[in-house]
Structure formats: C-alpha cells, structure tokens
Image (cartoon, rainbow, N blue to C red; front, top):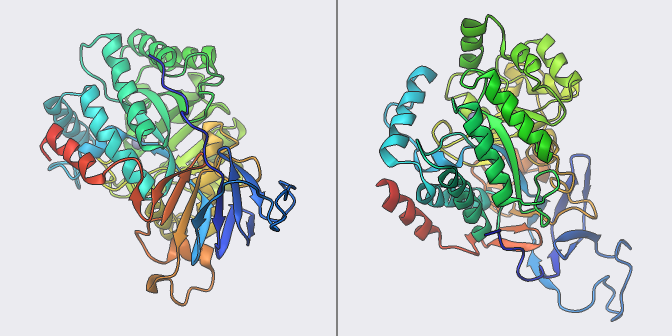
Length: 459
Ligand SMILES: [Zn+2]
C-alpha cells in the first residue's frame, strides 16, 4: 500500500514578529514571513504576493494563522544529513564508549541481534529519533539504514523501511531513507533496494515522492565493509531510478582497512568503483589529504561533517573549511545514537565551530548554519530545502532568544550557535504545517514514544 499523500492543504501562515529571519547563508531580513500551500511566499509587503484584496495593508486575505516569533530568530529548518535512526534505541550501551571501532562494531551488532531488527523495532526507534530531531529543529533527516533483519524475506526488509517512513510521516517530518548495507551480498542489497523504491516512492522522479516528504537513496556503509560488487549493484539501482548515492569514508578505521585489504586508500577505491560523482555524498572524511580533497571537489562530490560522532569515536576532525574552500559543499549530520548519543544538530553545529580551528581556518556561525541547512540539501539534491527564499519549501524554526542565555548577545544569528548550548526551537514548521508548537510535538506524545522504545528494548 502506498504512503498516503498529504490529506489536507497546509494552512496559510504568518511567521510574525521575528527579530531576524535567516533566508540563507548570505541573506537576512526583518519583517513577517508568509507561507502558503506549504511554500514560502515572501515577506509581508514586499510585493511577492501582490494582493491586498481586503485592504488591510497586508499581502494576505482570508484565514491566516499567525505563528508567534517575537523575541525570536527564524531560520530554515535544519537538515540532519547523516543519521542512523535505528541507533536511537541503542545509546550509551556498555562497551561502546571509549573503545576502538573494532570493539564498537561487534558490541553494537550483538545488541541488535539481542533486540532483533524488525519493523516493530524501527517503528519505535525511528519515531524517537525523528521526534528528537523535530524538537531540536531538524525538519529533514537522512536515515542511513545499515542493519537489516537476518535471513529475512525481501518483504521483511521492505517492512523495516516502511516502518521508518511511517514513523516520520506520523510526526510530520521529512525523511530520506537511505537503503544502506553493511556486508550485504550485492544481489540481496540490490533486490531489496529495488523493492523499497517500488514500495515507498513508486513512480517518483529522482527518488523523491511528489509531496517532497519522502525520498529514497542508496548507500553502502563504506569500502571497509562492502565489496565492489555491492557498490556497483547499488549504483545500478541508483542510476535506474535517479537516486542519490551516499556512503561513509576516511574515518581512520576505513582508511586502515582499505590499506590492509586492498593496499589502497578509500577515495582511490571509490573512484575505481564508480562512486565519485556529483550525486554522491560522503560522510565523515576525517583522515583526508589535500590531494583527496581536490579530487572529491573536482568530481563534484558533496560531504557530510559529523563531529558529534567523529570526536568521541576518536576518528579525528574533518577539514571542513578546506573542503568548502576547494568547492565541495558540506552538510552536517549527527550520525547515530550509538556513537553520538544525542540527535541535536544545532549542538553539533556549535561543536563544528569549536573544533574547526584545530584543523584549519575557523568556521563562522553563518557558514555552519549554512552547512546545517543548504549544505545538507545540496547533497540530497533538494534545491527547495535549506533556505527561505520565495518558493522554498516552508520548513523553518522559530528560536527564542529572549532568555538570559542570550542576554548581551550582539549578533543574534551568531548567538544562535555560540550562546545557549542545547537550545531548542519554540516552534517548528515542516511543509507549512506546525509540527512543534511551544517546544512540544504537535502530532505525538513524547512520553508515549519513549514508552514504546522501552517496551521494545527494555531501556
Ligand atoms: Zn555514520
């Protein structure tokens, strides 16, 4: 059964009274923001709508819902470009902290085996992960799903993808489901990817459903785990359906295993296996040389920075400023709860700023906010996301800056990231619908989502 389409039209919204609206990395403005049919129309009185039939001095007539943005900064909705939603039910597990990747992987695998990966587990963990994201301002999440039920039918695997999609749909968030693999046989991965495309986004252009709320992509975990055959098989599915391709590379362990197994570095292998191109986004990229940065940029590859995972795992710090300088767009991701116990992208944006000077030039707050919005959208091939220019999808956050944590802040946009660690948005809008209002989920009870995880995994 296909996903149900948007049931009712989104309301007309006026985002009213904001101190400042961040339109994109280079543009900010004052005044109310207007949203209609799920898209940004423009600023009130700027002539973008041009009609004032009732003569009240606004561009708008008819029923308009006002969303209070007084004492607040409005930004585009954040895009978590690299997550593993399954891991939201597997945080702070004993034996997964302060250990090398060679210990982390089997410890996580044992926990998954103990819980049994199936649709019911993803229904609980993905709902928690998507809800956590929404409460933190993440309006689009790319879920790189790597771990699948063992010895299961294609339908069972598709059910896992569908459970994830249904969880996001119920909460009102946008989802990119990345059919990942980790040591899957190439033919199995391809067969399952094909089935997931047909089930979740039938007939979609570029893997994006017509309403934009669901996208499917493919992504082997990396050259350290997946064979050339798997990369090529998933690449073929991507080519057939116009899907985006995503993988992970150059964590230290990835580089070490590639050298040991193939005598080559991961970027060499990705190149040889046909996985360097403008449709490819590579997460992590910690241990990357200047020459490799140049090759990635020349191939049009986009990157995802995940410092909230890379630092605690001891993988190092991706030279993000150098990647951007070379012309490779960079998005921001949290990666999963098994390595980054939080799914708080704004907190990781702050971390990205804090650690950047250790590996190169500093990154400005606006640059990092741009990574957490338009940068992620670029890698997903979604030009309508990550900004608030007229015509943009109306995904936005209203961030209160009226509390003491923001007292004395001279630059409210820089303050969003530098001041008030752990900041959460007052309101969140996705596709013109309010999904978080006054710091609470609109479409679900937070405590029920927690109870569902507890019931399923006992934590
Ligand atoms: Zn990851």
